[in-house]
Length: 250
Image (cartoon, rainbow, N blue to C red):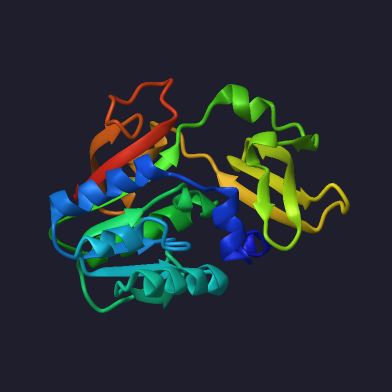
């Protein structure tokens, strides 16, 4: 599966730096909703630690122990308190409810089966306080992009980053798209100029199409109340890069 891809929290943050617009959006949603926040697939705490620093009681649930370790380090460095829990977003019981539940940065797309997505939504529903909201973002699938997933290994120059131990790490990706499963399966290879494939990690991501998402939410006891197309809250269209969704209990 994708465990090796998430086996180094600091490498992950160097691979995907920035994200200030997404952080600002989720901080604003936490402020608008008020109260407690739960993030599923909380990763290295990239969004949750800033939200906790705003004074919200926060809990992060993450499957990868390595990502959790990096999240704990970040929270400790900033002097903020976050409850970190290792767990699976499909099935968990934290014994309480939350005013805001977040599933950010395409984390939902690690669930490849529709039944797993619905199970996640049902579990979210059980953890929503009265008036609580689920906010999530997933990419808006592009048929053109999916058609280019032909299994050919290609260099992603924009993803190159500096590693303190190895120098510049280059990133090559080879992907295929399984249309029946709606899953893109990739192999990510990290190399230096002196050494090829110092890390090779598989990564599979599901596509959830725009008409499909409200149905999956409904099966999980939730309903879509707002959907934006980018972090500026532009209206969602077929050309939007994101499906940025605000959901409530049905």
